[in-house]
Amino acid sequence: MRLFPAALALGFAALSVSTSLSAQNADAPVDARSMALLAQGRAAAAAGKLDEATDLIESALAVDPRNHAAFIELASVAEHQQLPGKAIRLYREALLIEPNDPAALRGQGEALVAKGAMGPARENLARIKTLCGKKACPDAASLTATIAKGPPPSAEPAAKVPEAPEATK
Image (cartoon, rainbow, N blue to C red; front, side, top):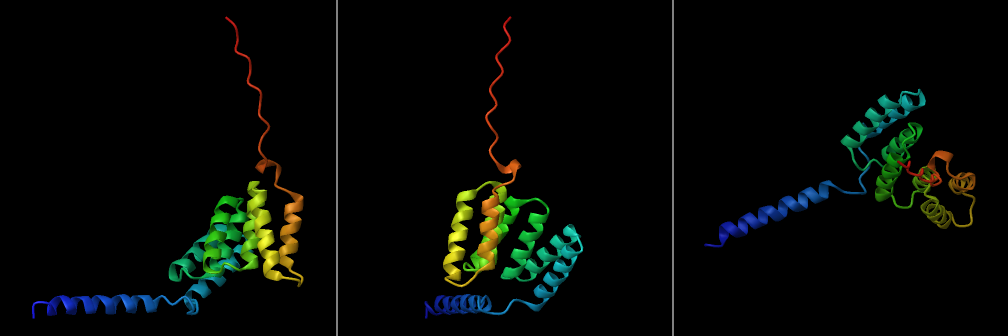
């Protein structure tokens, strides 16, 4: 009799944990409201309203954080805003949800090139080629061209400027 209340509490705790875990099924489809907000965000981005697009896509992610496409679109908007560091982080979030997405790997690779990180960009290219196998892969071709073009001049390390000699008294 002394253990009954503890056993009952433990049973309720186990029930609530199992219920909350089943509510977060990774295979469940993305919430329709999130997809609608994503579509509005894409339309705003296409119209050049990047701040509005960012707000709408972030709202889509607030509704359903598993919306892989929203992370990719938000990263694309960040690239258009000349924010490659933010884009890299957002593509990484998309890759946590879907690790084998060639479009996310390509986008992240292009953002890495924009930051001057050629090594990681080449690693992304190798992963894309592995995923595509022997068939033609537009994501691999696009990233190959970006890598061949190289980073923009602003991303390359600046040459070390020689220090000015100290003035003598």
